[in-house]
Image 1: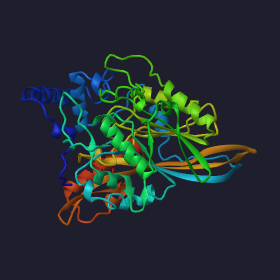
Image 2: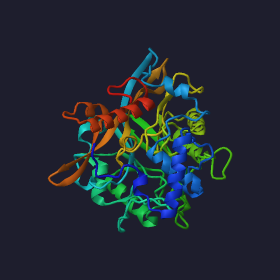
Image 3: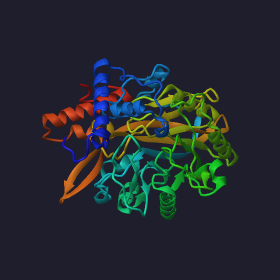
Image 4: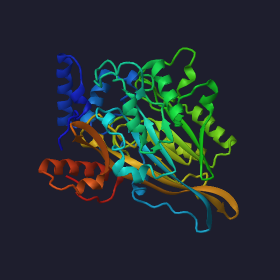
Length: 450
């Protein structure tokens, strides 16, 4: 499939000719000897902690994603959750039901400004028909000049978008997103002005922001949304800020939890901030708790073992659903039954991928829409709220030109199979999309595998 976008971040790399030779040599060695086919154990996830070799590894997997899980991941438990239905007890009496849709990274892409009410049209039924709609807003709004999206060995690219691009991302026809996760590694890319401009716009549009705070007190508090008689509490954090400082005197502005070892940091992550937010959910009598996490290792198709450990601990602490993002590729959905309550199932979506992507390679345009059904009722006369359904639907960003203007549109992966007149190049591209979807989500898919 032809694209006006660069294939991978390596095609937008801006480095010296001498360093380019070094990168090419190491990447060639990785191809020959295969030492990056599995996750690099010592690599840092945080940009500010990355060595030059870590950055070269990052570049390699951006074009050839890591397809194997690390050895300390309970991959068997994840595989058991593939295409598995969630069952509730037969004597559960349902009183209220709420539907929830979540998408991954919403990133500025040229063409978004022409895509209002077009971007989501083929997937509006699996996103905007739900009671609560959630996404990760990766690009900051700003009144400053928009920066170009290029990579170097010195700094991560700034992510920012225009108001027109934001409108295309944040709404479809008469419906907006209800909740945006705003604590990401790019939150401070445009400084204090970008943070404030983004929060002011979300407040004006009535969209709840997660992970960013206007007052010190908000940092330890959950965010709440109530629909259909069900009160949902959100707890949230990002793994880092790409080394960007928080505004002096406003260190409370972003919920930051150092989830990942590497780059000289060892030991268990201190996620006591999330514990405090969970406790606030309990104090405010939330029926259902969702953890919204920006974490993980980019361009790896499976989470790391320590992420799975943290996710399960959060489930044991009382979290009912985990929705995560940042790796820029789709990762699996695990269905975890916590020891604290064997009647419950906690879905863990480790990474929903890029819903909108600045790059065109199959692994970078494939993402997932998470659909969850939550029901509140009674069991043996006692009140209880359960997850009744959780499914991860693979979708793909596509490009088109309409009246000379570039537009973007999100399609269900299966819809690509139905396109007429595909040439061999497009068929190969679609086979690669199915290959990644089958690897991550399991099951036999049409046109799968190369």
